[in-house]
Length: 161
Image (cartoon, rainbow, N blue to C red; front, side):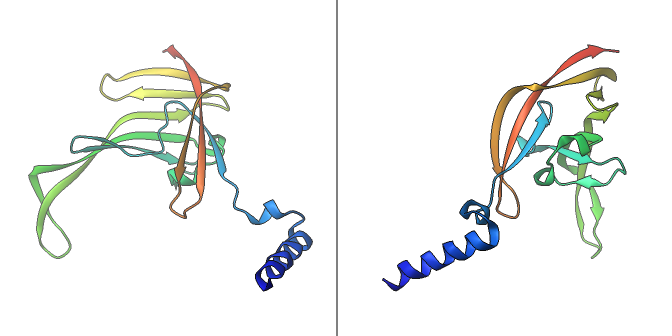
């Protein structure tokens, strides 16, 4: 009986402070992103494929912090792996295999709805135009802080330069 009144008191208090009960529950964040972006690490054998995002000042933004993709100005698609044939000495003087990070693709924002895409393997460039109204898939992931993020992916049309 006491717990029932206690819960009622918390609900009443939350209504007074926040205006509604749903305000005290964490809402899932929504990130609307282009289809070329992947917030997760993809494993290909011993290689990790990762995307790194940067703002206009070239400050790195964590993938689980990406909200409105309009604030992102540069995106790099990287392949990370360990080269066991080459060694380096760490700060303690211990030899370790060399970690390698190679840019595979680079996306630079041209304007509010366009990106310049560079394929480093072929050295070809293309222009991508965002179609934000054309959502292709929705994916949920957990952020490092435990909150949930819903990624809504939209298409981009391509034109070769």
